[in-house]
Length: 220
Image (cartoon, rainbow, N blue to C red; front, side):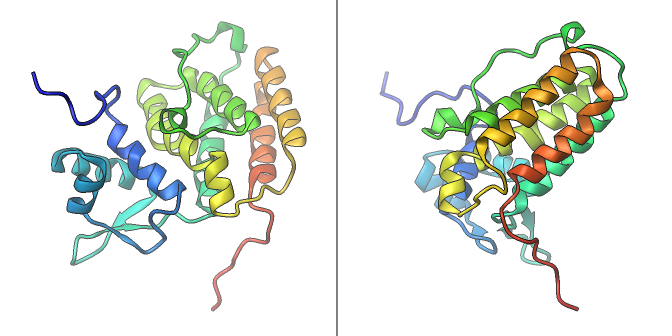
């Protein structure tokens, strides 16, 4: 039997993960078009896998399909993680309406962040926050949980990596110690059933993790 030319697939998201790593490491910039043939050649994947991955990236909102041409254009930029994180806060807000304790919520399967398979690492507080959210949203419907896992947590696990932060100069507004303390407060509230505190704490964390500069506002 001939040797395989690339590692065996372990998840259905692997090609999408490869493209997210390309975004995280500045292989592509905002406005760039993603060419299927180039991706096939560079990542040794099939055209079918690429088309599925592009569909996933559109669902994550980091890529859009241009009108008329149908080209897949990168829209992710150095502040776009904040958009994904705010969507995550909204899902935490929905989950927080369930009066429960984290002790009573079924634990999600143990897994490593997606970035680790690609030689990247998350800051400790970010990994803790995303793991905590993964546990909190277990109270949501299966469809909502799937949305959070595939469309929010997966891209954030790669696009919030330390490498992405360095490459794109995404210096957070507050340091890791302060951010970690906010996540610890979230975890305590979740464990002790004070879920009404979760949306506010999650929002505070997103502000702390946001890029340390004023948001760019469009000019009329």
